[in-house]
Image 1 (tube, chains in turn brown, yellow):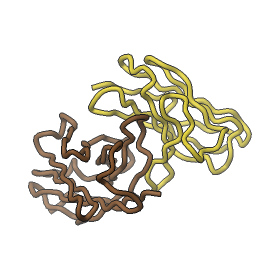
Image 2 (spheres, each protein chain N blue to C red; image 1 turned 180 degrees about the horizontal axis):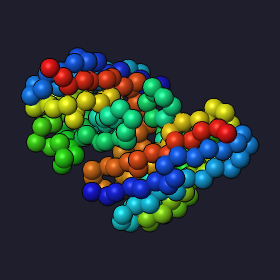
Image 3 (spheres, each protein chain N blue to C red; image 1 turned 90 degrees about the vertical axis):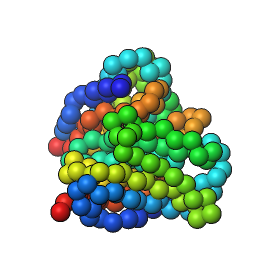
Image 4 (tube, rainbow over the protein chains, first blue to last red; image 1 turned 30 degrees about the vertical axis):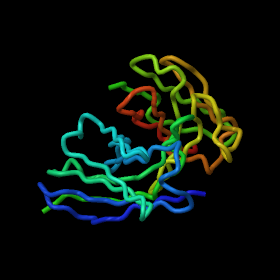
Length: 120
Length: 107
């Protein structure tokens, strides 16, 4: 069974870049049929889809964040990463990585989530 | 963006009750809808996909229905472990969007 695990700094200063990595185990990130996705959730609020990456390297982003987001993959390490630039306090949230099934839909595997606080 | 509206935003029910949550989309999403359960401090867990298909390993007391713009999620015979927040999510069009959540408590 595939497992995902987020890692990265829990505190980022305003205007800096938030960088997180999702490590995938129990399956290859290069296998087809899945999008590798980032989702966030501010405390006490709902879920926001940030963007996704396919194994070909193609990406899609939420237009509300598109100018600030990059998602990349390191297949040798079975990891994918999120960079969010020019952060403000409104980017404070729990960030989840997740696996999205291309054919049938649904995020069927999630990391446990990591809290990132934007503060000076 | 497609907006997803859930109702109610919270509800309280007794063990053994049948619980129903509604989810409305601002445009036709066919059956491209999933339902998730999220317990405090945990990641969401996929329960239903394609509006009505039960994810493997999910108890059969959970079910979903609907198509187009109106959807329903049902728990038959509520159990204490079902206390959680439930979210719907559309995957018909990017950006994928979620409902605001329904917090379910036990009376």
